[in-house]
Amino acid sequence: MLTPPAAAEALLFASGGPMEKKRLAEHLGLTEAETVTVLRALATALSGRGIALVESDDEVELRTAPEAAEVVRALRESELSRDLGKASLETLAVIAYHDGATRGDIDWVRGVNSSASVRTLLVRGLIEGKEDRGDKRRIRYGLTTDALAYLGLKNATELPRKSELAEQAASIIEEEAAETA
Image: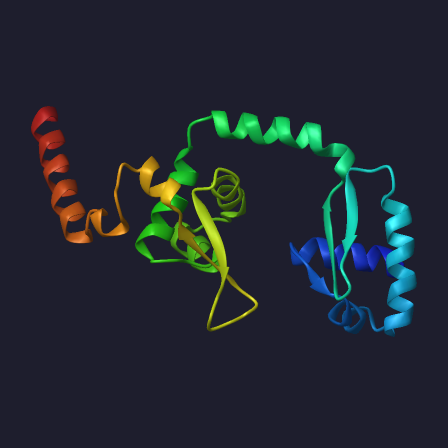
């Protein structure tokens, strides 16, 4: 069984973003005063590690510790210098053609977990996440102007349409079949 600080850490990690302290207290089955004590214990336990507890008046979040800024910056720079891989390009296409997509949408279309690809695209500034109007618990991802520039487009209306892609795919298949015959 987890200690309350370990349970709080797990919940904050799983949330992937800020969590209201009231909501955390509810999930832990604690009073707000008890939750304050648990958060102090968690902050102490995280001291000297790569993760820190960041609190506002109403919310709390796990973030990279300020002391780790240099190594995190080096990681981000190395990620930005690489070309986008197939998985990230697929994820970018799903987001582009769905006019904004949730992680669930992306995973369903690709048939695999896309969290690493979404993270890569976010770090590179090619997509941005906004709260889903229909369900405030979800994030809907959309293209940024940087993504359009990366794709060589002036706006999203310049994306090739499905019918155009189907025609192009058919002609490529015909060409390849003719070459191998």
